[in-house]
Amino acid sequence: MADAEATLRALLEEIAAKQQYNNYDVQLKAFDTAGANYTSVLFKITLTSPGKDDLKLFAKVACVGEKFRSTGYVDKLYVAEQDFYNDIMSIWTGLQEKHNVPEGDRYGFPKFYGGNPTLGCETVVLEDLIAQGYSTYNRFKPVDWEYAAKSMEVLAQFHAFSFAHRKEYPEDYDKIIDKLKFELPADDEALEGMWMRMVDERVQLLKEEHRERALKSLSGDNAKENYLKYNKPRRHPILVHGDYRPSNLMHKKEEGQLTIVPVDYQTIHIGCPVIDLIYFVFLSTDEEFRAQYWDQLLVHYYEQLALALRSFDMDPKDVYPKEEFDEDMKEMLPYALLVGVMILPVITVEAENAPQMGEAAELDDFHIKPNEMYASRFRGLVNDLIRWDVI
Image (tube, rainbow, N blue to C red; front, side, top):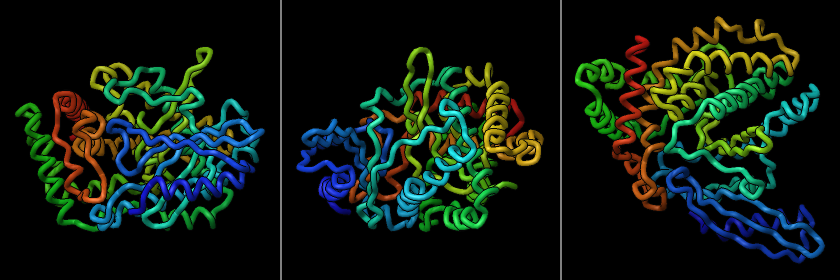
């Protein structure tokens, strides 16, 4: 793993030249996300040059060590992010322009200034949205309806791109399908051992009458098969974000208007669109929110998807009819339980207990001990799945 600051400074020299920042000065400040990020060192950057406005940038530099990289899985995350910013984003931006999508209705992409795909030095440099007034939602606080509804609108726009991309550039999209397939880490034995320890801990937090039903979906080969199943497409090979949660959504509110810009595309892969929806809802809301808004949120997502598809001159009934969406949701909803076991602890972990993914980090270091907030949220998740007869 290369020195993060040295790697970044070399890339900034190229960016400064492209932006014609001659005789530039650079200010770098590494910062911590308090448990919201694990795979990169993050920097705030200011480039100054005579006669130029200050250029405010944000950078992510790979920080995962060789032991964790040996699974092969982490390398794919960095490659996927480079692919998104270097290739996919420009195609999707062009699709919005080609179809004259109104400016106010367009998906928000962060401006990309450059990247380094070299193994061990992977870096992306983007505009600094924080300097523009954006922030992330408090990961310990369940989202409200306004934030959830806007997040669904943005997610629907994101999913609509794949349908349009596949229709208009089928050969290019076929290459993406082949390259961005979902895969589990290569070290099956280590992964299985960690998984079983996590399951044992989580299930003990449940009501006694719920434990057996949860274990049936979480134990042995069934769990691995399900995790692969839920991260692959059912009928439409769509690019899913893969980590769509408030920590990866930058938002700001001006004059009563909420704007959300997704970031962090490391986990983008080919899958089923409802997976992103399930992932967001069960990591971002609690049982009380879902009791009030679950059905409404599903309706809102599909309505927004239909609008986004029409903006690309596609008929939702021909592309992804509501009946298919409902079937996908019914079939894939058990994925919420796996998300609750593996990812929800990341949302609820205190900053001081968050994993440190440095040079010596291994897969098992990602085993996060549950706290009281996690226990409450996980019980609520299981209550919902049992009440809905999902598990």
